[in-house]
Image 1: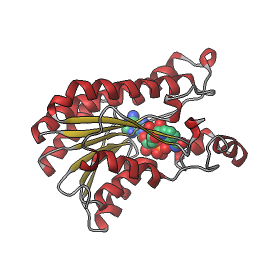
Image 2: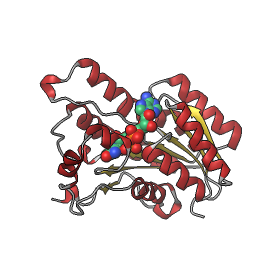
Image 3: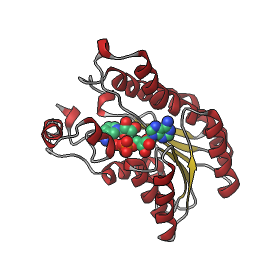
Length: 249
Ligand SMILES: NC(=O)c1ccc[n+]([C@@H]2O[C@H](COP(=O)([O-])OP(=O)(O)OC[C@H]3O[C@@H](n4cnc5c(N)ncnc54)[C@H](O)[C@@H]3O)[C@@H](O)[C@H]2O)c1
């Protein structure tokens, strides 16, 4: 198993890509602590993983709350004694070109997508140092690589998490902590359906990929699994686009 003996924390894990990562990491031998603000959905993913004979704990974790981060890290320490992997996956999207974006929407997106990842990184670093190293995986977006037509704050936030990744990589390489990011293209997860609620608009989005379709949550989770495991032990400060070729053009 590719994550045997490892303990992983995943944010935004109650559904979509985060839930797929929780399921896959647990199947690959990791003990998983995953958090979200959707407690009912989180509890049912927890029951499903544990029912399949693996080990996962759901915690209420609003990534913008320092108190929630402290509690989540305490759960990892008390239940599993260590923390080796963090996936900063929680994210939100708000519609709005620059002129139509309210400060409230700007702040909401920045708070979850950038500050949330920053707080997570800050809270897990001492745990990873204690464990002798670790792997931090930040979920950015194709919209962190190329301009986003419909949302100014989303693209700015995903560009922010991209450079947070590099700062983390260069600042903590000496502690054996690696940091990398993933840029998903359109993924068949709730956020994409929220952004593009009708089939025609989804097709307009997926036509920008070379494969002409949405990615699956598993296709993203396998990238995260690689970056979480020792198979990527020489990879840090790197960026993996899993976007069906969208940003290759
Ligand atoms: N779906 C796509 O097409 C797509 C494309 C590129 C990048 N992404 C990114 O992938 C990540 C996962 O999104 P998804 O596609 O699975 O959609 P999703 O909306 O299902 O997942 C986002 C999760 O984050 C959670 N969340 C929101 N605010 C939170 C907070 N304050 N604290 C903790 N959790 C919070 C949500 O409840 C949800 O479970 C996000 O960062 C998103 O920006 C998605």
